[in-house]
Length: 400
Image 1: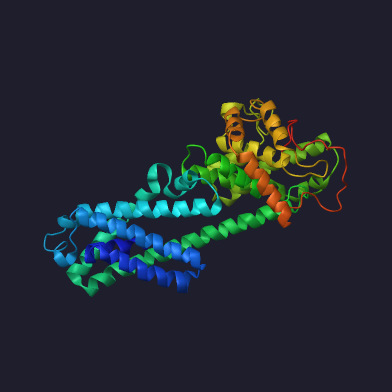
Image 2 (image 1 turned 180 degrees about the vertical axis):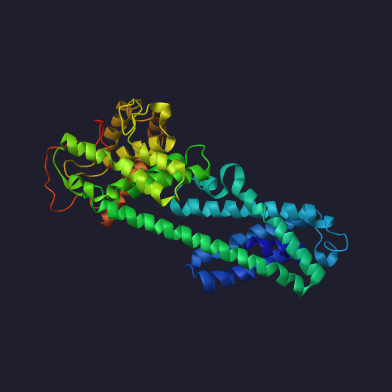
């Protein structure tokens, strides 16, 4: 919503207008309202000022005429329409580029991955921001024609829209917090996999962000990865999950039912898209059709489920268990190669082993252990040298 008065300023006051507006309001907002650290606040204000200044030069160079010189009103709208479009595109593009660069540097990730996330597939997010520009044009026109009355006519609807956005964002944040709390509650029942679901989500995110997927689909797979073991919240699994020894056939059958329990829970909540639910249901399906619950083969398995399957296994292999220490990277690569086309999608295996994904995840697990946020197994668990049978159909190491 900040873009709307910013874009209106260039029509009302020319190229200097948006620079002064964003410099003043940005500084006040960062210091007194957002209260972020000094470096982050300085960057936010600076990138807005820089983007507005460069876009203002483009506005002037393309013949833009502000309202004081007849650019609006009395039939002069067309004088600034083209330059206004140029200003908007340049300003939005620079804004996204500078923010993506700062995030990439501060988080140590590739600029390309951040760019795709902030801009969206084929620049769709910039396009959506651009769709707000006609509102700014109308705002400027109303101010020219009606003065202060025009300003109030435009501002009140904008405040109502902003309020609606805030309410929606808070609801989404509350839902995310509830899901995180639910996952933590599940993991208290499984003493061997503390932090597992969150790590699987992070690993899935690293993988799918290297694929040509839409942001909406990426977010669905990330959400499914976090919730893939949500069915284990049922009390029927509590004792089985704590059992350090081999499972009986009956116990194995019970533990495998967690995928259908998860689907029932997510379906009852009615707010999850079909792609999330299908990924949760099928994240133990195998390429060779020997998985569960439906015995799907290769192309029948949803992409999200395939991603969770390989992430589940990688996190299990790179994490300590009561019956073994975390495997070295070469051993993990060997297991992925052995079970490529059997348990794991070959394309996903190639993507993982040809990148730094395994190394990045190994470092993430190590950071959690060093910080004390990850408890690979409870203190009272027997440190048996005999490995229990995995809670899965396949012989390859897997997660929860």
